[in-house]
Length: 629
Image (tube, rainbow, N blue to C red; front, side, top):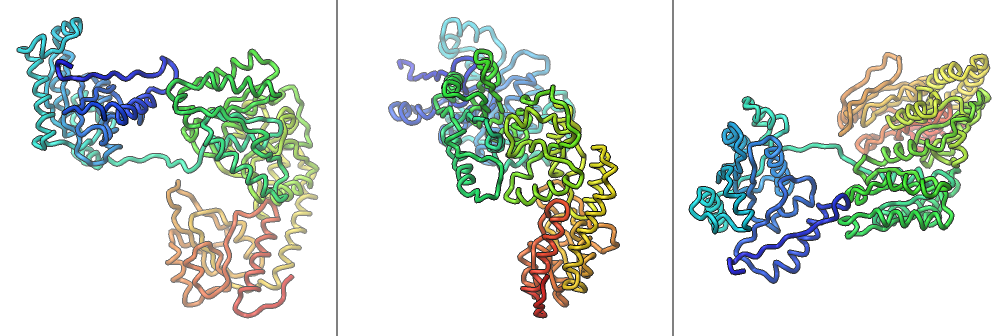
């Protein structure tokens, strides 16, 4: 304390385990609550690592810990890359607030190094406030544990350090300007280091400092937990804080208590299947590997033979080698199978990604010695995990029954571990929806288990069902049954249309969708009912990938893009009998209204649509019809 300087060095986790960023957060909490209160210095100088790899390393740059930021960098590319990352961290923390004091050029003695640093300073619009040349005097001071200003007070390096101190003092008095952080793109940085000129328009774009990224709305770990629940015989171990287990278990307990017969697959109370390592803030610093091993031992001792280990955000931050821990545990417990699903909370993606990851992980149970049965199929995909599960599955079973086909395994939903072991008994896989996750899962099952799949989702509408039947018959070798099956299908369709057509014939309909979609099945049905379609319109999709629409081959005019306000204005003078739309704007028209769902499989969706149209027109129409089928 004789020099008037108090030095504090913060430790960290053991090498190779835990999270150093979390350690910095804990250290600064301690400094703020205790040490800074007992020591009241004139200046606080925080010397931190030269790269901002996470929020923990950015803690010293937060406004409640520091007033100004000095970036020390050499002219080497990786050093400049780290300096640019620091600017990104400052930007993320404070936006356009001016908090950067300047750049210190800590030269390594490279050819043209100073010129590179000057170009970087110009590019990020922050001045170089001091230049420290490479010198053996620094090494001499390190050997003697002596500051430069004491050992070599008359040196050029001492002058450079005093220049930094002068800037800091002036900034503390409000006499020195601070600068806002405006990092550059990586390709701009490379261009600058190579000495090439960056175009003016690119600089202008960079000055906006905009950021973009994928928006994750749900948790990847939550999707993996769903899969664990839907497999009878699988126990779940969350490598997570207790709060994650509470959220997941509360959600599934509510589903269990409100089941009311809507689902036929197994959802057990969370207390029967979910376990948690309950890692804490301390574990985030020093690692949670031992806690995970201990929990696996406890579950095995209580009779668990199949355990799905799911990682959440904190587990991912810690960096525990969960996959290796699970393999090691299996090697010492041959009667226990441990399936790691490394979701790391929402780091790996959203809930759909978690469903996919856990489903793929379960493929390790497939018995490759099982021979396919030509009259059995498997159901793949996640869309059946909805409240409409029973109605959809009844429709699908009825459709498959026309071929004499049976469902072997619903992978994954309402199946057991034994069902998964016998997955290869299904001669073909059927996907339930056209989403990317369902197709990716079908590809993985084909690669790992060798089972081909029908590259068409379960059909909706009459025309789609006819095409699906033909493709399925070709894939399963049941072409001889096509004519009989199509005859039954056509007879059923004609019966449905004939039941509702006398009521709905010549009624007028308008359809508006808030995003492009394939509604050809609904258009086909409405026209077969003898109804007139006055208008079909689609609005642009919001915040999603571009989508296309389909209304079938009927020569109908389609308005696209068309907002709900525009659609309403075209219908106001002569409203139709029925508007099919979910838009609240169109509901102000004086006519009947209903929404359009995706529909159910095969002809059940058609019958459902006919019934809803009939009900809406009868109950909400303008002419007081009283007859209904």
